[in-house]
Length: 335
Ligand SMILES: NC(=O)c1ccc[n+]([C@@H]2O[C@H](COP(=O)([O-])OP(=O)(O)OC[C@H]3O[C@@H](n4cnc5c(N)ncnc54)[C@H](OP(=O)(O)O)[C@@H]3O)[C@@H](O)[C@H]2O)c1
Image 1: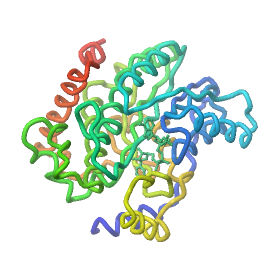
Image 2: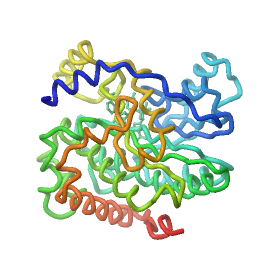
Image 3: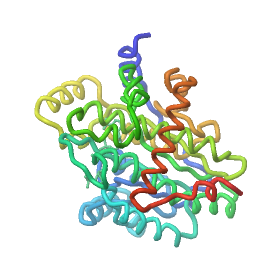
Image 4: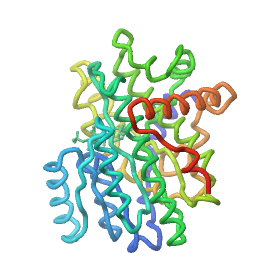
């Protein structure tokens, strides 16, 4: 079926609200970008599902507190929830957040949902801004929270989750050679003002997330570490993600939304499915509230795709090293 029909069918699929794990009343969740869109709706669900502790990561304390107040009122759980500041444009902010994570007695899932679409080219930490926010800082947070997820899995005899929110736009056929055709370092190659296009860069960042998730999962068997790492597509939904894009793109997105978009609440069900999913979702792409590896094109899973995946991985680790936030991947993946 041509991809466009598949997309329409996916958007029309009814999504169930996932069943929470039986131990949710003991569980702690972190949701990034929790003050709006999917993050907000996912947080609301976790409150309603009776999660013990929900940490809302927000870059603006003010927006985070406003969202928390509204959720507490709506769910009648006045004593649940807390706002922790996290700014993904700053790796130091990620480190400070991770330091607080180390003080938790338990972490069941990191739902790494925060992300941006950049309308204009901007550099930060030596790379284009959406690469920093969506990929480098998001993966830094995923790496830094892994020890707590591993420890919690061991201590409480549960499977914990590192769930990264990606997008189906990463899998479109025109994405096939965007990354493997780059010369040299992938992050440098995607940080050139001359070739920057918003609607290409955003899916590029989401593809890099998928490749990083696949590689990380391949190094961390669930049977040994108890942590499920997966990537989830929330689907095309109403949200504020297009706040930075230009007028023409906004008009196009608005028309598409009227025809096809889900509500952010419906989209958030995908995040919950991935954060509750079993080991079959490890390293996998989830969409429409299920593991949907069949949507992952051959150009990602074949030998060329695997070579690109390894290259992206090495460039990611090198980048983290360059900006002074090295990851000891051996320590994270050795028991
Ligand atoms: N909407 C869609 O159709 C769609 C489709 C596929 C995938 N996604 C993905 O879904 C995720 C959530 O997006 P959404 O649609 O819910 O959009 P949204 O309403 O714009 O939410 C994005 C969240 O990320 C936060 N954020 C942005 N930059 C940040 C930074 N530097 N540091 C910390 N937090 C930051 C935002 O905080 P502020 O409020 O402070 O800006 C906001 O809370 C994103 O990863 C996006 O790529 C969305």
